[in-house]
Length: 313
Image 1 (cartoon, helix red, strand yellow):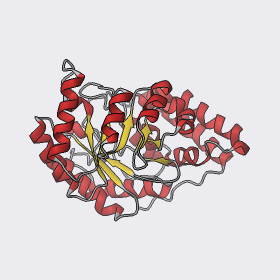
Image 2 (image 1 turned 180 degrees about the vertical axis):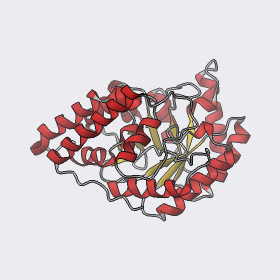
Image 3 (image 1 turned 135 degrees about the vertical axis):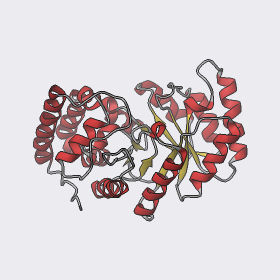
């Protein structure tokens, strides 16, 4: 994921058919949508992908389709989402890497239980390093099965081995972000922040980019922010974008990912609203709020003169 410019890495959705099977045609269309928007890479098989609702076989199929559709245009990373001991996880990591991803992402909450110590966690990480030699890895502070945050010193030690090239951060603290970036010094390493409330500050602090659910509504807007976050001539417009993201944080999280799929339907993507996750329903008030978000975003995009991706059916 080494790059000179700041980048947006979408946390990919998984489209489904109405019978609950993965919609691979929809997945290919969605992949093209992200790339057309200017994404610097793709994060497949993540929480937004409903990875814990997929079987191991389905996760591998999903990753393979994304890698094949991308065909080398941008890097693809993918999470190792199987539960089990170190040997089980190492085996799945190897299977994912053989599909052609840039790096396999370790879910911090799967490596050690919530009650287990940092020492146990670190011991298992180094065991995984040993069992997956030659495979670039990353970390994902996923909220499920619980959120295990890495301490800055921990991240620094892991990055110092040369094995960790990617980190999706969910600490929600700009102070912790700054400390992590200070500790994790390696040109091949990139920290991608998930929290858009402090997106501009995080980018200025040295984050490699952002990886957020807002990119499943308007990826081109997140790309625009990554490209222009420190352009003094656009300071007013940058402030508009940052405030827009703050103001709409809550509405984009309600019954997610169903709401994101509804928003993308409005944008022209041929995907269903089906989700395997039990997140609630798209009731009238939520639908009305998303309709307003769509209207507000349309106005903002026109003001910023942001081109919207062409959707190919």
